[in-house]
Length: 181
Image (cartoon, rainbow, N blue to C red; front, side, top):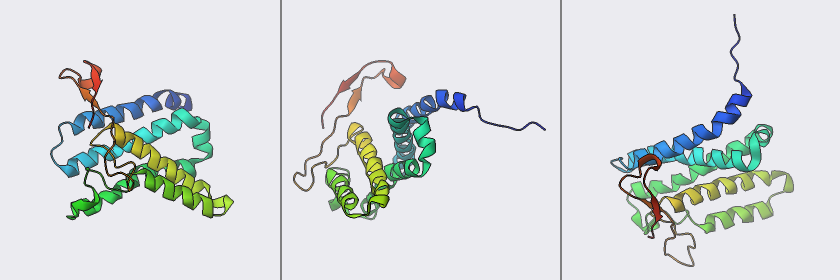
């Protein structure tokens, strides 16, 4: 009986490409989504893949394997921050006047940094990993519109830098142009 194993060199080569395809496919499918639930179901895998792609690019596979618990925390927090959308679905639109809740701001990052400052040194990696996940989530959200209340509570205005696709820009054909909010 032959034992099945994964060729790690093949995984290292195709992993980032697979993550990129998940992000692109999710974003393309979101353009045809009908309703907030469908958009959410398509957006969360893209957040997860986007965070994974950045982790691979910045840290490398060796670090991810050696620090898999921290990497898992980053990936988990890159998705879990969207739990703050639940009050919106329950009928409390005042928490997100610009489309995304106030917790999708740098205030959340600062709060996590304060946690880092007060916890014992041996536990700091966990709020730091959570902070990284939140930052990766915010980077994707600011790039995919409708914007974020980044500087809440100082400013309620939303910040965004999405690109606008031309009609033939599906899957990279055509051009992308910056658009404002």
